[in-house]
Length: 116
Image (tube, rainbow, N blue to C red; front, side):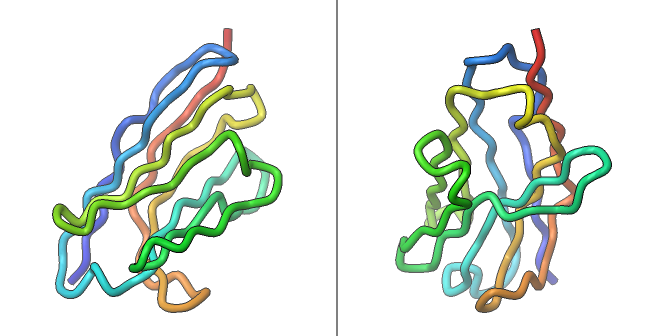
């Protein structure tokens, strides 16, 4: 059974930064793609970024350049560094384990609020 626990969310002012972490437990996680998604109130969940086991990354075009995904396979953790945050980045951010393009496990989510 895979468990994903996100942390690092919170309230930040516009222009600020946050680093989200997702600690994963379970077998063979290092071989899977992991990702971050987000869901704003009243909107559908959307892709933020994914990172394959070998480190290849994929980003939402609208977020490329401000957000950076990384992973440390030694500790089964994936990170999301978010810079130059905007109010429209306010959402619940979810960690995922993916098989190909399909999400097979979700974390419980962590709230990010960008507001002055």
